[in-house]
Image 1 (cartoon, helix red, strand yellow):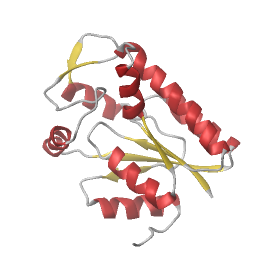
Image 2 (cartoon, one colour):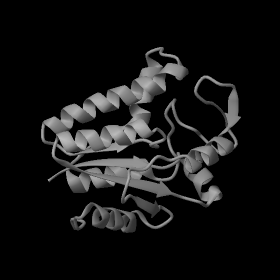
Image 3 (cartoon, one colour):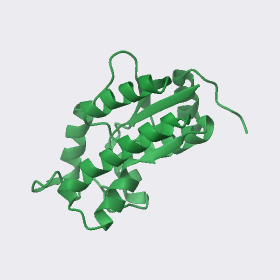
Image 4 (tube, helix red, strand yellow):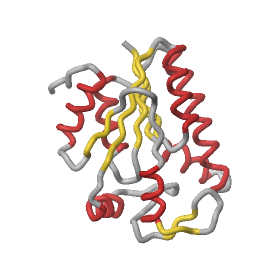
Length: 187
């Protein structure tokens, strides 16, 4: 069985950590929006154009990888309805099972600690008190941007998993695998 898993959630919520763990379990390719966007930024593309370019790269790679018979995990916040529509369409074309998993961490102190402790890429928020340029607009406080994003996550019709990522990673993987319809592989 092939899968297209769409991760969702605000920066620091645990999307990438869970995506990598699920990638191991499912033998899936993880396509990380922060990696592609940071690469595009480093090539000199403006921040206002890099996000859209990154999503196009992820979409094209997703379609290609699924057509090769390999499962894909899209590691991005999932703030745009067209990403959900794209995922559902591509999964159907490739006879893959589509699932969305939203990582949630409502404790803002824990969220800020995660942001501060990770090695950041150019596209990433470093802490909640950071001024962050968003979509070419003037800078906004990261805390406010994250609250806005959390309120505007996009979801597919029907089932999707809201996962409290304050739990240990092993528990999150077990819950995610059960939602996907599989058991976690031990070892």
